[in-house]
Image (cartoon, rainbow, N blue to C red; front, side, top):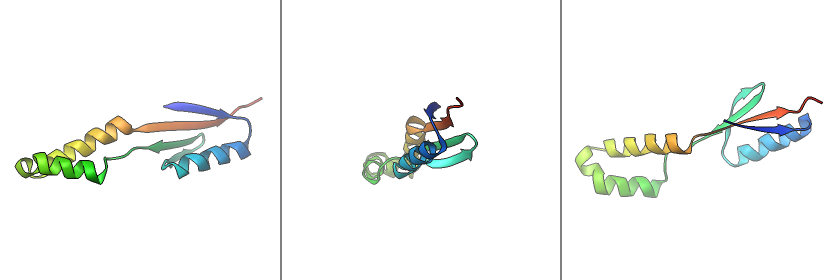
Length: 83
């Protein structure tokens, strides 16, 4: 988990909005925590299905989605610096 420190509440909201535009979702509010992950693109799943899917009955796609979610998971905590 990464921590991003900001100077005030206004900057905290601006940074949170920026992360949400990038696809992060809010997990907790105090301290503000956002997370992001993906399960692979449609093209990648299509390639996996046509190369391995016929023989694994789609289980290869599930394994690939699990792998992508684990590999791409990112969590960010935004804290206001207390001066």
